[in-house]
Image (cartoon, rainbow, N blue to C red):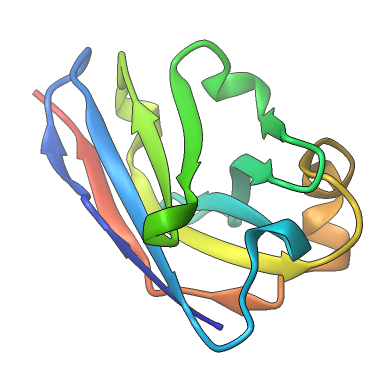
Length: 131
């Protein structure tokens, strides 16, 4: 399974960006995977931002992005999106998308992703929020 993130850039505080994660690979099915967006700010550990799972139609958001970020998936395009609104300077980070083959849904798995890990990672895309 290969993942490719895109859509990062420079945006002013309060602005919006939409990230895309294109997924490819033989045998990939959204029903079998949790897909997550993670981010890593300079000097900090990588942290989970948002996750989605089709098996139970669930989404997960870390507290700092709730109400501002929306994760969604387009199965026909094998793409997961992260719509980021009302961006703040502390959202500045490299954003990665990742996938985990699991029977668990996003609400169970993603808070534990740091411990249990994700199987497949794409290269990151830089998001910079600055005036």
